[in-house]
Length: 148
Image (cartoon, rainbow, N blue to C red; front, side):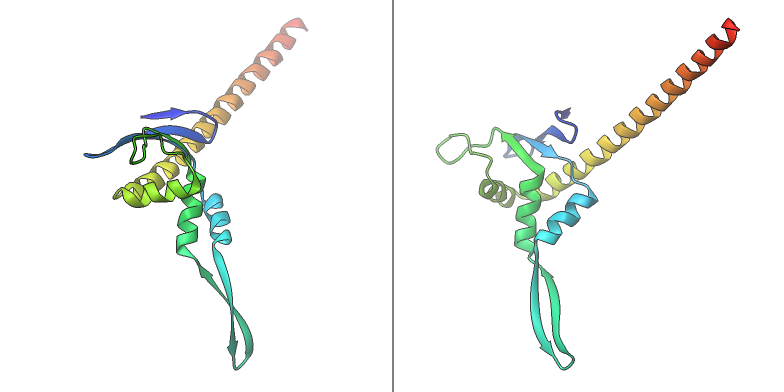
């Protein structure tokens, strides 16, 4: 079930044989992935016969942490060992994602699907807006012709 909140966020329900909870996700698009990837790049300088060369390497662990911190906005029904609500912090997000098999793939799929859904909705809104503006300008044109 998808419950839209802000323009780029939605609540989604996750359920498997052991876990049932809700995540408030932020839509994930290509631009966001590229920005997060830039933050995870580590530059190394190596000496070569031609001189010093810069090699860029992506820190996968940092990249994962940044992505899940970005897409997970909040959650419900996630508790700690003592039965208390687990705060939705950067560290806890990664812990939860890593402790539930296949959750990471599901979250990424949902965040990208949310982006696609929102993109289609925006296209429809623009199409409807253009159609309504075109219709109203035709009516105005016809009305002004009737007065002449």
